[in-house]
Length: 291
Image (tube, rainbow, N blue to C red; front, side, top):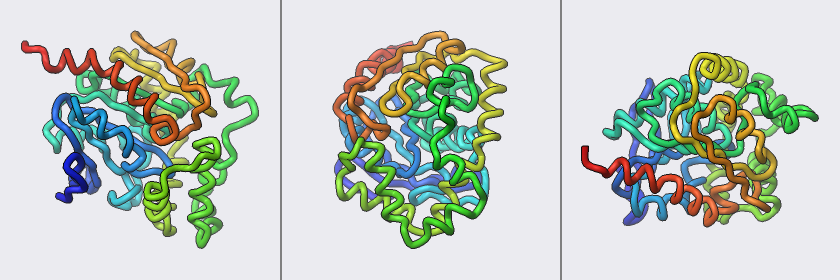
């Protein structure tokens, strides 16, 4: 175990055939944070501290990303949900509030759909849920250009090789509407994706999207999302995710953060912490209430 500060420690934890690098902080009801691309657990750097005042925060590097195992396969959302459930088992948490953004949203959703007894509350941000109805306006001009680029096996790794920093910077600038992210976090992201094998793992998420979409479709066709759920939108996804969730979710709250880019935890951390704190307050009270 590596201690980064008085609040955050890093651990390597075995789950579902891989080892996951995990940042853990605080005590209380568990909150699992699932990042996206091109991020690591450090996406949540400005969120972990405030949340850890009343929760045990668990922020892994997803399969193949950051310092987690560069697995050969298993990047579909269903298997990533198995990773997450195994991680909760390994740290002794039978339940958690789960927060997902970007590539972390589909596995967070499937974890809640397939194991609703394990997810007390669900927060989903800035992603689409496969081909579920509701995102037609967002997709009217087609999906973002990099979806197709990343989906071609082996291509993007070769094209990006030697230009990883510039490529990652483009996403970080676009995702914060030109503001960029703090220098040390930017450097950590660039280092995390600075070689072809790391990029291969990242692009595997896009190559698994058809399988993930089928899993999401099947889950939504056979069950409803019964856990209290909050959808948080910014630019560019906006309310598309909430529109996908509305027909299949029993309790849905939707917020959009004006003037905020895709990378909400780093572009608008104060607003996000406020939304999460309010949404998780009821969860914390229920979790601490004696039986």
